[in-house]
Image (cartoon, rainbow, N blue to C red; front, side, top):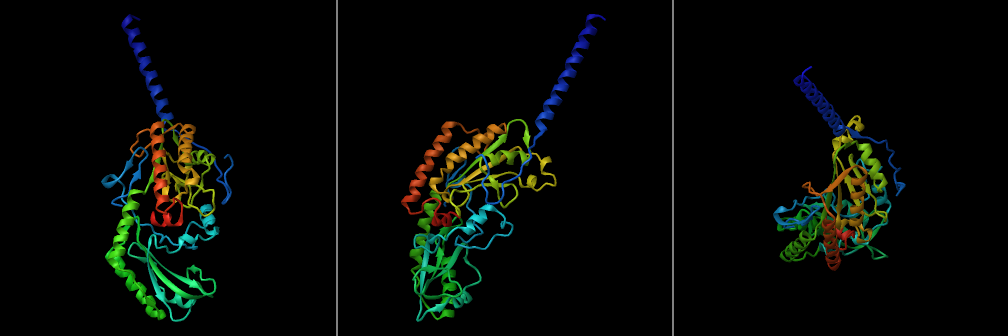
Length: 376
């Protein structure tokens, strides 16, 4: 062979080696890390351990037109022991249902419009329940009725077998759907009047304009102090299967949630909202063979107003995100895909401490029943 032929032969060999190397790299990139996993039993901790609201997006506080819009929650915000379909076996739901009632979960002038219903004589719980309107909502706001039980004089949700010497109706001033408006106030008056007529009671309604103004002021405060923190963990090279992701999540204290693709980190106190939520693609969780599904990212979220300060939720969010990223060869980013460095994390933590202080000063301590109702 002459030198030209040898050169072509060497060049061809190099091209072939390049193709093989590329195919190996592509195969590795498209492969899925898999892991077998048995989730902890329900209730058993895993071993191993407005104007639009202000939102934390993982790197900065957003407000105004740049923030995500609020949405109305399906729940009315008041105590309800009925299980949500599909959540009967969720450990978090079980803990909530077994927890003692929170007295601050009842009507409160801090966040509710109250209308006393004067009674000429005590009424039975059965009579009150029969007179209640079919809907517990007024527009987008929760509507509720309470009775003062004869003998104990405690306020409670009416129930059979009890007699009540006084009643009051209430509607929430604001929630994530916005402030109570004039139309909703008028609907509240009509519902309450119908209830009073049925029971022979005399309602005493507050001034509409004063209550609407109070609702707007509360909504203004809530809009400026609503924080929902979200970190994204993205795979750097090899994708994950749902089982592989859950295997690492359990090591950080997460448990299976009620919905596919949702894991929760339980609070230390039964009945409180989960400290953190981990979510991944629902379609992957519902696949016939989830281990053949490919995941390249998951989200960790913290609804700040729903979690008590004592839970140290941000520190746990930060630790869990970094541990998952390290264990699964990923990177922690904001929702725009920008990596989060130590300084950014520190700044977010400092902002959260100021937020906790502001909520406490307003008697809406994070994790309290009133805060959970207002920020829902």
